[in-house]
Length: 213
Ligand code: IPE
Ligand code: MG
Image (cartoon, rainbow, N blue to C red):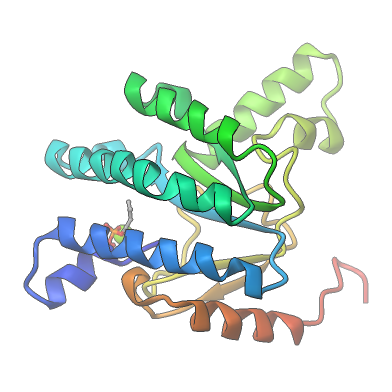
């Protein structure tokens, strides 16, 4: 979810406003999931590298997270959403960890998966998984995959990056081995359910060969 800052800058608004509109884009997208065949939507909300941002912006993002969980949890439950979290989320502030634990529990029966990457870095995730596999005495592709944070999620089919940047920025590196990639110029706050529908239609037309032919 990239481009919140630029969205705000173009309107001469504070960055925090861009993040706020980014949250609204998330809310609309999650509401639209029932109209799609998407089994699992994974959102890259906060990376392990985002701590490098000014303290004030990190605080804004954390406060938005608190507000969002509080305001939208009942809607998640009502809309059959099951929350999952990937990344080192236990390293967030204790009150957020507590809110997330509660949200995970309250949504545990939902059938539509919403995975949120929080304090997530793919390289760190792979190292953790490889170390666990090694401790079990078996370093294979299957063993590493089984220890990734995404082990219980369906395979990654489509990865969309917004805002015109063409890089993965430490997101789902292992999982994207054969994922279809889309890089769109739309800034995240402008990314609507229609944009997702269009991306899904394009995905349908892709010929996936997984190295075969
Ligand atoms: C959102 O967009 C990313 C988050 C960490 C939530 P940015 O804040 O990276 O926006 P740009 O790249 O400055 O436009
Ligand atoms: Mg950015």
